[in-house]
Length: 100
Image (cartoon, rainbow, N blue to C red; front, side, top):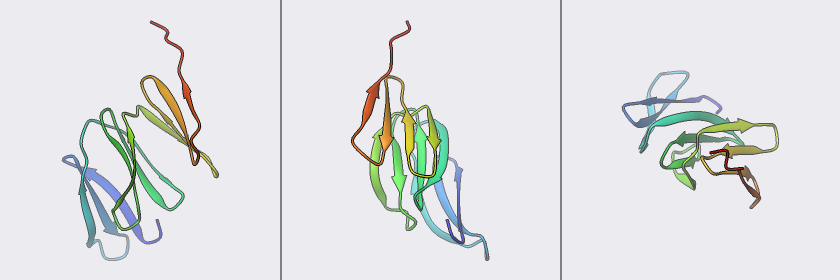
């Protein structure tokens, strides 16, 4: 986002300047990483246990719970969890069919 890139290493999100390479912020990430996208000037980090949306400054703006993958469009983000899909922005979520 802008002149910042986020990388994940050792269960930690590191925001780095694309100009100097200097750290801007560091945030611990809990769980097995499954996906990561930029959406609406924020970083979305998905894990199998606790997914989060981080502001450009590294603050947690929303917690999503377990997410297996993310689908981002220009206007919306769908967080696909093990049992439900959540569309952001908005309170809309869908229970996924049980195919067991």
